[in-house]
Image 1: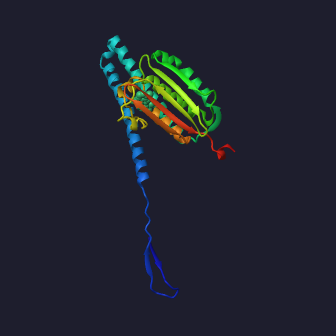
Image 2: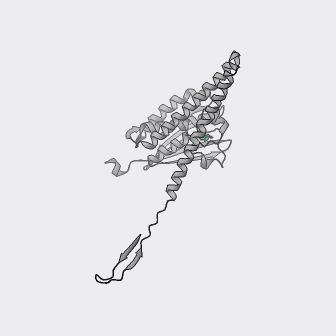
Image 3: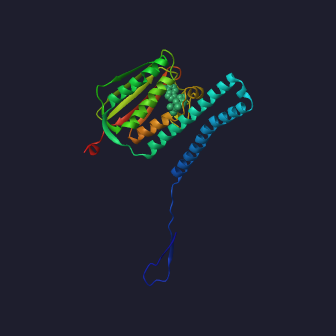
Length: 261
Ligand code: ADP
């Protein structure tokens, strides 16, 4: 932007200055790349089951429908793919709600919520031959978004059972210090390779693609967890040893004095 300046009111000579504005667009560029990758990933994730549904429907139309056994199997595959699409859309909706809605804090006991969620998962754990238990302080009062906290626990416990094996264990531990509440979900499951660890919080990233697909994973669960915990001012963490198990953790700060009043 050129700027003119006369040293004295009657002076005809003008000095020309330039004001140069520099704006760092690195963050904007990064956000744009993230958005573009996300749209590309969503398209890919939806495209795969749709392609499979179309191929099977065409095979049925071209004659496979005449053989009841084949038809039955193919219809089963179509229903499976439709279920998969539904799960992806439902997780996308949860993620988009978490991103667009402000955290609605209410006071509740996190220990009670953990016990409830663990109770609800007992049947699923049994089906997988996994033992599930919690080690908690009697009460953990907290001010947080109830639905979102429940979502975090559900996603972490579901993974700890899903990526486990017959005879494995899952423990949910939580404790409180003066400053924060720390929760850990430990499993003796399949573990994660160290090269995958930094990426597992990314949307749609799966370390074990085959198992994730088989167990109905969408690759969005951990990104939802990370978003919710960070929106509460907390931090997520993971430690894992491939073949031995993983510990997923999060820490939530207790309310500051200003927030309490
Ligand atoms: P998914 O729907 O595939 O489970 P997540 O976002 O919840 O997606 O997890 C991302 C990936 O991280 C999973 O596909 C899996 O490979 C890995 N993962 C998550 N939790 C565990 C765990 N407890 N043990 C081993 N691997 C895990």
